[in-house]
Image 1 (cartoon, rainbow, N blue to C red):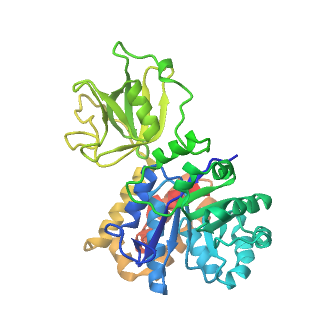
Image 2 (spheres, rainbow, N blue to C red):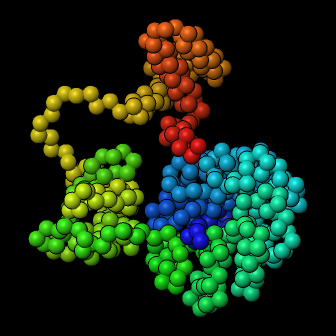
Image 3 (tube, rainbow, N blue to C red):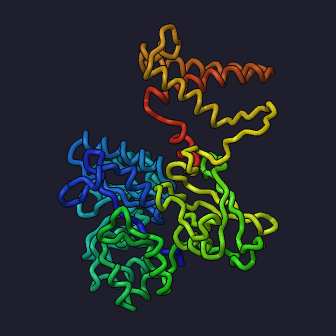
Length: 434
C-alpha cells in the first residue's frame, strides 16, 4: 500500500496566508514562508485554497501559488475558486499537481469530466462534504476524478468513507480532520488508515512537528514517509572517537558548505528529525545545526562513500552555514589555477540578472532599455524575428551560424521573461515537472 501523506492546508486571501473563517493573517501573512516551513519540517504535500471573491483577489492568490510552487520541493494541490475550465488551467499552470473542484457547487459536476478530458485524471480532484454518497463516489471516479477529498470526516462516517473510496478504487484525502486523537484511541481507524492517500489535520501551526507525528503513526503500524537508512551506524567505519566526518553541500547549488562530525546518536537524531545534527568535538556534546542561530540545515539526501567512512549530506541551508557569516566555511583560498568554470545555468542566471538590472536601473544607450521602452509588442517582434533566423541558419551546414542565432534568440527571450516577471528557476522547475 502507498505511504500515507501528511498534507497541511494553506488558505490564501488577497495573496496572503489567513485563517479560513476570520481571514486574519497567519503571522505576517507570508504564504511562501509558511509553505517553506511546512516543507522543511516534513510535510509531504500542500493543500492550498484560494479564498478569493473577485478577479483581483483571484489573480493575487494565483501569484502567491506560483511563488509557493517555486519555493518548495513538495507537490501542491490547489482549489477554492473554480468556476470554469480556465480556473482549473490557472491552478495547474501555477504549479499545482491537481486542481480541486468543490462538488457542493452544482456546475462543477459538469466541469469535472471536461477538466479530466483536458488535463487528465491525475490532475483533477473533487472536494465533498463529510456526508458521503456511495453512488456519487463511483460517479466521480467515472467522470474523471483522480482523488476524493473528504471535508471534516467525523469518526462515525470515517470508516464508511474510506471503504466507499476503496470500493471504487479511488484514493481519499481526509481534509480538516480531527484524526490526531482518533489515531491514538481507535484501533478500528488505525486498521483502515492504510487505505488513505493522506490526511490534513484540523489545525497546523508553523511549529508543527511533522516528523515527530509521523514517528507516532509509524509506531502504530501506519506506513508514512520517514527517513530510513539501509545502513546502521555500526556498519560505518568510524574514527577512534566513534565518529564519521560529514561533508555538507547545498542541494541546489552544490556548493560545499562545511564539514562536521557525527556519532551514532547524532546520526539517529538526524534520521528521525530531518535536521542535520552533529557532535561538537570542542564542546563535547550533541548539537542541532541552527538550534541557537536559526540557521538550520534540512536533510535532502544523505549518502556514504565507497569505504563507508565519510558521509555526504545535501541540505537546504537556512541562512548561512559558517559562524563567521560566510556562505561557505571554505573561503581561505590557498592556490588556484585559471580554468573554465562556466556553468550553463549560472550563465543564464547572470545574463538574466543583468537584464533585470537594466529594467530596474535604466542605462542610457542600452539596447536592452530600448526594448523595454518600446514595450511588449517590440519585444515579441524581436523574439519572432530571431526564431525565424534560427530556422534559416539551421539550413546552413555551418554550425557556427545557428550557435549565434540561438544566442540572439535566448537573449531576447530573457528580455521577454524579465518583462513578464518569469525567472529561470520557474522555467527549469516547469521543465522538470514535465
